[in-house]
Image (cartoon, rainbow, N blue to C red; front, side):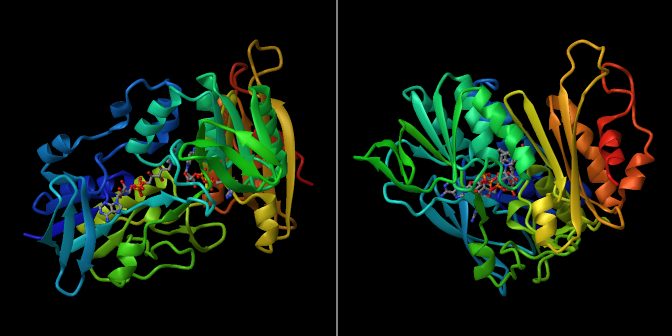
Length: 442
Ligand code: FAD
Ligand code: NAD
């Protein structure tokens, strides 16, 4: 019997294991997961912190018991510490019973994910300082929040912004400290400005262009020292980015790509026969940039895993790539982006331009509609769409999916203008804001 071992059991690993078993029921499938949980939505952690999701376990999609019923053997608190590729043998440390043992494999999926960066500052090892990645992190922060009044968050990227909302919902004071000149610096300044306005309207103190120099405290954190002054805090969240967990892969001879994540082809195969990679540890192909790209997102991880599982089960499947689509919410504002920002496009050497309009997400006479901002980034001359952003109230921002689909098709602003989009007063003005933006392109 062929034996598949999956290392890491969250989005990439759980998808690969389940799909491989479904596709080839004759396959032996074993998952080793270092933490206490498998198959959960880390994306829900900010909403567990805010209390909107009362039970942490609600984030679990499939328990180890449910996997077992489907014929997938799952071992939590088991860490794969070494892989001997030549002999197809791996060494596993069982954290529960503190013992080491060996297992064999014919096929391997590396789905070891990513880890939060911890900035090299004095004082980061004290109590009251957290990163948010795993279910265990979520539980720890939730408990610590009970005794905290003032919080500081380092990093105004996705996690920093989502958690700032969660902490404010709990009535905490929040200071958001971002090293770059604006929150969400991966977006263009016009988009960041909307985010900043929303944060400040909800009582978040936003410090930008600030360098943290130390975490002050005598064993328990008391605040953040910065080049712009001291921020007192009982709880500090470090949300300054992540890095792929590639150590195991590198040690066994798996090649990394130019981004520092594992290089894969469209079938999620690595350079080693029988070894696949999926999720945040692996690269994707960027279909606008036409080169490898690291996009550590949950939906991408699921697709990677499903593709690897299909291929392992001998079913035809390919993961063509990404255009870089993401969405998040800060209080009442949903921010969706796809493709390249103007800043990124210019840096990549495109003759890029941008237009941005403000419209509404319903007819002007319909009650309860909200402002909606649309930004298009395009190539001068050809009109090729390079990216875009839609910022507004909740699901209205899902219009981003139209732009993402066009990017996949290498569409132009002309193509966008020609689209038949849905209209009724509660949903859109008669000219959809996407079309209004496209009309501004000269
Ligand atoms: P991970 O989730 O990192 O899982 C990898 C697992 O491998 C870990 O559990 C780790 O313990 C285990 N592991 C590592 N090494 C070993 C080893 N040697 N042996 C055994 N096990 C090992 N994405 C979105 O698309 N939308 C969102 O809204 C969104 N929100 C997010 C909110 C938060 C707070 C966070 C933290 C992430 C969010 N993401 C979101 C990103 C998304 O959660 C990740 O892209 C996804 O979890 C990646 O899954 P993965 O399986 O590749 O990696
Ligand atoms: P991030 O890369 O989104 O943001 C990190 C931020 O920290 C950046 O703005 C960066 O400029 C800033 N920074 C870096 N060093 C700093 C320092 N020393 N002091 C102050 N600021 C500093 O990373 P993240 O917020 O940690 O999120 C991790 C990953 O989780 C993301 O890459 C994303 O893939 C995923 N995620 C996605 C969603 C979503 O899609 N809705 C939500 C949460 C998390």
